[in-house]
Image (cartoon, rainbow, N blue to C red; front, side):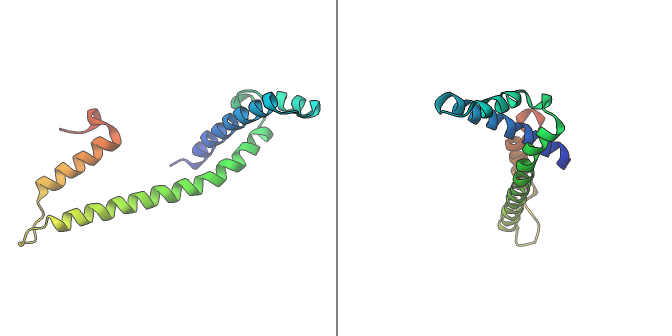
Length: 121
């Protein structure tokens, strides 16, 4: 996972959210002309912002990334534990796993995550 690339995508999203919010405020509330002039310079596509201006959005993106990483890790851990429980519940007295069941379960997981076209038959 390329963290800098993810941070940049999150920063772009943060800027888009700010654009929506600031336009709404400008349309519905009385704000100073000075603020309007300042905002007007920032009401542009993220790619047009200066690096200094982008950094303001990256600050918030860096706050989001650890939350996403934790949620993904917890989800993966939960999924691993679920599969282990399934395997244990499908273990025969001989100690062998019902491999057909396991293969079908894993195929189902792949279809859910990647779509039916990308999964092997």
